[in-house]
Amino acid sequence: MPIATHFFIAYAYPILFGWVVMEQLGVPVPSIPLLLMAGTLSATHRLHAEAALLVVVAACALGDSIWWMLGRRFGGRVLQLLCRFSMEANTCVSKTENYFGRHGASTLLFAKFVPGLSTVAPPIAGQTGMGYLRFLGYDMAGSFVWAGTYLYAGRFFGDAIKRDPTLLHLMNHSAMGLVALIILAFPIYRWIKQRRFLANVRKLRLDAHELKKMIDESSQGGSHPPYIVDLRHPLDYMPDPRVLPGAVRMGPSELARHASRIPLDRDVILYCTCPSEETSAKVALSLHKLGIYRVRPLRGGFDGWKNAGYPLEDYVDANTTGDSR
Image 1 (cartoon, rainbow, N blue to C red):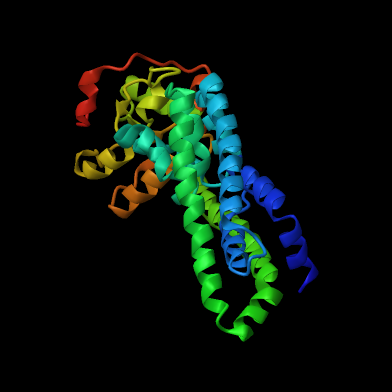
Image 2 (cartoon, helix red, strand yellow; image 1 turned 90 degrees about the vertical axis):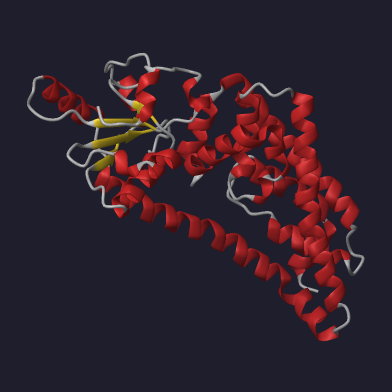
């Protein structure tokens, strides 16, 4: 038996616990390959699937509880931190906020099955004021289903290959190598995908001072005013409900449905709260595909405009019609 496999068997439970805690805290180290491997090895009675399941659920509870407490105490600032340091977290924050809006605490039952949501769901639960015991109950139930699915899938695979000594021998000698390859390939793939996306974003976005200049010129009659769309989720309004001058509040999916209402003779400016403007950029790229080309995300989003000291105003509900002003 290879040294790496022997080492994993000897310290399987501490390795599983530490690895899953790291993943839940946002480190891009996928746990699924280890869960499958642990389940497979349990078929040879070198590990106990039930013990591994309890260890993984405990690790999820620890990591998720830390994020819940941070979300409860610091709110949107924690989500901004995730957006800044975690690849694709911007999109996952938006998805999770929408899931919580539709399903509430039940979101925690399936969050771990959706890439990225596992990390951002706990702080959003804390931000929304969900009680800790309620959060922990739903979170542990979801963790139990998630971990059990992959551990027992591995166990099923292990039971199957036990009937073929050749496959069992191959598994013993190549399992750790395959796990290492998957673990290394996963973050590299996400990094390449993120870099390509950000390259497209840089071609589209504009700075806060550029938008301020456009607004000032339009107020002097020099050009049409830009059509500004606030893409923030209702949870993001909690720290500061104000909007940019004349902005219309509209969610990304709603904007896509009402694309025909967007004026084609004016610049369309999109902003959200993500430091890398990922939500705005994705919507902008989608609108480009629909033939709306004068659309750009705002660099720095809402906070970039606010930190620059430019004016904000109270939102007027009448603007939610989405019609051209």
